[in-house]
Amino acid sequence: MLAVSWVYLVVLTVGTWIFGSWTFAWAVMAGGLISIGSFRVSLKDMTAFVKRLPVGQEQADGKERGRKGTKGLILKFWLRLLVIAVVLAGLIRFGNINIFGLILGLTTVVFSITFTAIDAVWRYYFSRR
Image (cartoon, rainbow, N blue to C red; front, side, top):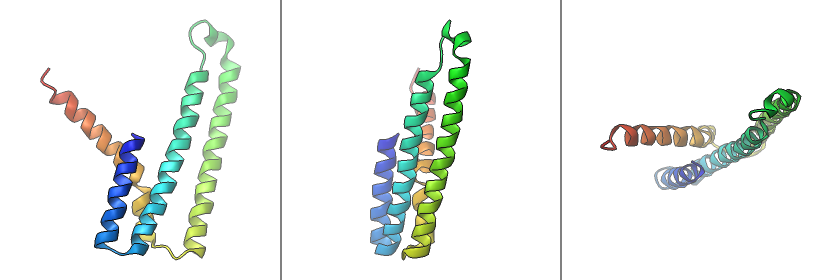
């Protein structure tokens, strides 16, 4: 999934550089890096959270531990959104950045998830089973 995001970002950045301008391509690249970085941190946090969930007999004993993990995950989520907001505000306020290119770059992970889901459905329905 992350590999698809990186490939899509490279293709999108090169395409906007060829058919657009360097400032637009830089904005796409900046938005894509922010988007992929946020997704990677979120993926790491969710993986760690799922690994800590109690299974079987531990489930009755581990409810408190699960609540603490949930609170920490929610706090990290809001902190990550705050950091992204500050970075985007700084880029828009102090940097010479194209807003539309930045928005296009921020959609990198969304398009990667969409492409991956379409590929999975395509393979499932047309796999000659």
